[in-house]
Structures are given as C-alpha cells and as structure tokens.
Image 1 (cartoon, rainbow, N blue to C red):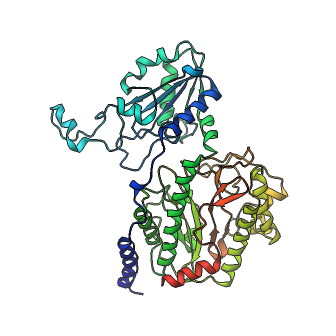
Image 2 (cartoon, rainbow, N blue to C red):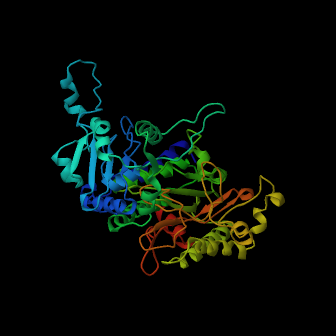
Length: 493
C-alpha cells in the first residue's frame, strides 16, 4: 500500500464526519440547576457538623487542558479559577460563603502597557467565570459571595473558635529524588498554608467524605454519564469502520475524537490509549512517557486495543474499551481468547444488582478464566518475565489465594488489579468497593488478557449503572460480540 493511499484512507472518514449533521448541539443540554449543588452542600454539612473549606483548581494559563477540581465542582458547579467554598454548619443557620476572583482578575493582560484599561479590553473577557455579585448568588444559590482577596481576612470571623476544620486536601505523594523534600500539589500547598495560619485548629481531610457522596449518582449525573457513553460508543463504531492495515494507531484515535467533537463533547477524559500488535502490551501508565506513543503502523493480522471511549460531557467522563481486528476479521486464536474475555464480562454483569459486594462480581469473572485453565499462564516462575500472561481479574489471586480488595494504584504499581473502577467526574473516580452496590453507582467492568507470545492484548470495558433491579449498560451501543464487530468493519469498507 502506497503512502498516498494511506492518506486517502485517513481523509475520507474525516470528510464523512465533517459532513454529517449534528445530532444535538451543546447548547441543547441543560446544566444542573443550583438546587442540586445546594442539596449536596446541605447533606455534607449535616454529616460532618464542622466548618469545611473546599479550594477550587489552579486554572490560570492551563491552556484548555485542566478543568475544575471535581470535589469543588460537585458542591458548587463553579468553573472560576482559584475559587474557594467555605461552609459553616449550624442547622437552619448554616452559613455558606463562596470566594471568587474579580471578573478581570488574573486575566491575560498580554500587552506591556501601563494603562489598566487594557485589562478590561475585549480579548481579556473570561468565558465562563463567575465574579462576586448578584449574578453569582443567583447562579449558585450561595447567599454570600466575596472577592477571593478577602478570604484570609474573613476566615477568622467565619470559623470563630472551632477546634476542628475540614479541608478538601490531596493525599497524593509526588516523587522527588532521595534527599529532596517531596513536591506539593496546589491543594497540598493550600492546606499547608492554611494550617500555618490556623495554629490552634485541628485540620481533617474532607476529601474522603465528598468522594463517598460522589459514589452514588443523581439523575442529572446519570444523564450526563449516559450521554458521554453514547457519544463515546458512536466514536468507537466510526473507529472500527476506519481501521485499515497501513494506518497509524493514532489515526484511529483521531477519527474517534472527531466524532466526539461533532456530537458535543468538548474534551476527552484522558489521553489516547489506542495501540496495535506488540505495542498494545505496554500498560497505559507507561505509554505517556513517549511523546509519540501512537506511532505504530497497523499490520494485517494485528488486534487493535482501543481503551479510548473517553468523551466528556458536562464535566462527566466516560471510559470504554474494545478490541478489534485490524484486517476486519478475528483469527481463530484471536476469537477464542476474545470470547473468553467476553464470557468473563458477561458472567460479572450477571451478578450486578443492589446489595451485592463487588468482590462477588470480581470472583464471577475470575471463575471464567479459571474454568478455561488459565492459572498456569500467570505463574511467573513457570512462564518467565517475557512470557507470563497478564490476566485480570487474576484467578490465582482472587480465588486460589483468597485475595481481598487492596489499595491499587497503576501509577505507583502497588496492589492487585481487580475488575474496574467507579466513574463520574473523573475517569478513575474511586476504587472504594467496601460498600454493597447501590442504585446510582456507576463503574466499569473491564476484564482483560495480555498474551505476550502472540502479541495479543484484549480488553472489553463498559460503563455499568446499578439500577433498582439490576444494571444498565450505559455503553451498550458499542458492539461487543465478534459477529457485530466484524459486520460493522465489513460494512465500513
């Protein structure tokens, strides 16, 4: 295949996407009413009965990459940079104060001219910022709104002589070479500075309490997640249709992203994880180390691993994965392994209903891999480092060794990977499965196999909503069955 024909294959799908009518515009979608956020703040105040401080995100000069801190947004719906929420419980007398930057504070002011009027010129007008005033009070249902510069002067009066204050902190540990102090995130710096000024006040971390609330979604959140999943599924189908030997992995990611933008998703939940053949065996946590991690040219006979159903909608994320054959048809071995993973996912889904512990769902998927006799292949002593399989969920750990839920971090490489994660304002919202499943929880179910000898990585991932009687697959529009995937790819050609 010539270089010119490769380019044609890339251009045609994009022309089709651009020429398609818009299904719905972003303006058609209502944002959450302020009462939704007010109810969340009231519930939190009733639970903790102590003053709370929730800092927003450092968004200035983020270049469109960052978004508001999820815990702050969950309680306010506010996108303004450097904003801070203070809640002082007191029954009917609960006091809430939202500190906001002035309208043009932190604005660009890129022209080196002393005249302050340039700061208010048209090119410096923020797009979605709230500023102190009646409009902010009306938009947030927070009775008091003050300039951010007044935070330190007003705080002593707000807190009084309370012994404990909850602050939405950040417990991440950033790396520093031995002998150097660990660097701090923005919220860690904020908490440290606050502790220095509140010398006689004990500071507790508020983040776990907010994240517990976020586990169960309300109807507005579910609607946003459903739309994000639907947009992602549409993009994934177009990605299947566009896949050809000779294309770069990243070209398929581009096709999917073009669909998401057309359908009203302003951004992606995370960077592209679209990789073919041997490249698909490298875990996503390592791919980001390479600048051009989608550089591989797809070959006939490869499988394409696309953990990139990741459109965002109204701040809410998505996370889908499908694996499909670059040539349009699975080989006999590829199909056999794929259907093992599919059976594991189906078995897990069959166990989802309110009251069930996630451990039962994990065991259901692991038992499928156990029935197929895969345990010996995850024995690293038997297989060796270069040939050992990656199996998730591991039947050896979860079934043979009586494994339990552990602290898992892909970035730190600790714990044992289970079957998925909660999803919401963040793609990895939480891995808290200490509570029984409840209606309104949304999480991914994503069994997978890594088979190095055959350059095969297979994962099937869906977003699952727990309902009153069972579950709803929010991403069901993305095909999972071999026959459906092959039909879509054949029709796409």
